[in-house]
Length: 205
Image 1 (cartoon, rainbow, N blue to C red):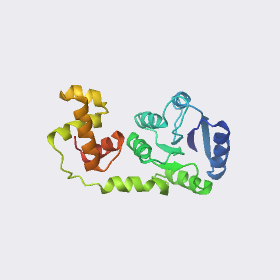
Image 2: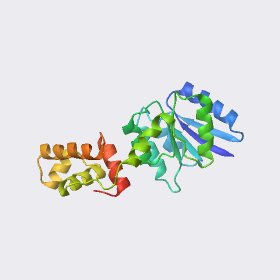
Image 3: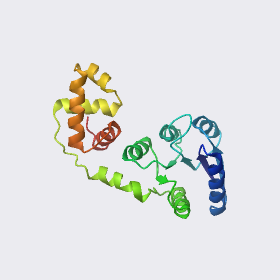
Image 4: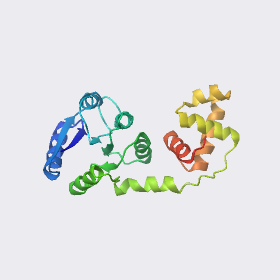
């Protein structure tokens, strides 16, 4: 029997979706929870084959839930299921360890089929967000950065704020912001999350 965890704060949607999942996936059973805290409790003493995680939870970001599940021993595979289709959120979820990314407004039959694919070990991604991952993959790893830009990029990769980066490198905040602006232009990104993901992928910074 396959076990699913559905982390969805809309109880009515969660109930309806769980019913469809169990009807379509013979032998599966679904645990429904409505928050990050409830997800932690539900996975404390249960073996979960796949967590389906809404990213807009009331008590935490679903991205953080995915990251926490990915760090378990053994890790729990988590699939993002959300209305958010912006590039920064997609890359944040993937960086956190999501094994797929589906949108709630995709056709229900397609979503169910992709969840079944994920249960079978595949990595389903909604067509509307796939382009972000392809764009990231096309960015060249041999981008020419100055030594100082590499240092600032390393700060972004560690999750430091601009102020923390300035203190660590002995720079003015405005100077750090100028380096970040140049990094965004060279890497063709628009957020700290995207810059950090680029650095992680290309082992830079």
